[in-house]
Image (cartoon, rainbow, N blue to C red; front, top):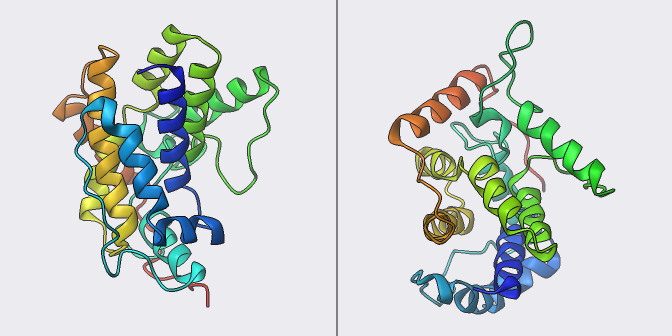
Length: 225
């Protein structure tokens, strides 16, 4: 894969994990997203089945967004956090039992500041969509060693994320499908970059941190109309 291939792949995956807007909903419904992703993953040898299944995309943008927040933002529980901090070790001492804005988020804030990049207020700095965009920036900058280190350090939680999505309450067919695909893609990316897969123990530890951190999250919230 050349730089353009990496940038395109990370960019497409990033869009899959943002709150769906009108244009994205149209792209998914029309099959444009699937067509582009199928081409993007071909160099990695990841199998990708084309065809938008009935029921994959809700009828309205609001319903699509409700599925997103149900799966990733605790509108149904159990859920799967879509930010890195809950999966990683926290600070020691007071305040060490948090869920969001942990060490990974602070590291990303420093990285954005060093590049004079503003991240959207709607997303935490270690949100998966932003991590994928940052990986694309590293590729574009021609820094293969930094790209490899970033994938190893900041995207190693994807297998744990995938397991939590599988165990989550929300149906959210589209996002479940693309979390599975992202897991398969990153298995191949790690292989390409000569990065070891996270061990079963490491994945279990990440899931344990999430489960401990999300205790007390309300079972119900209000959805968009």
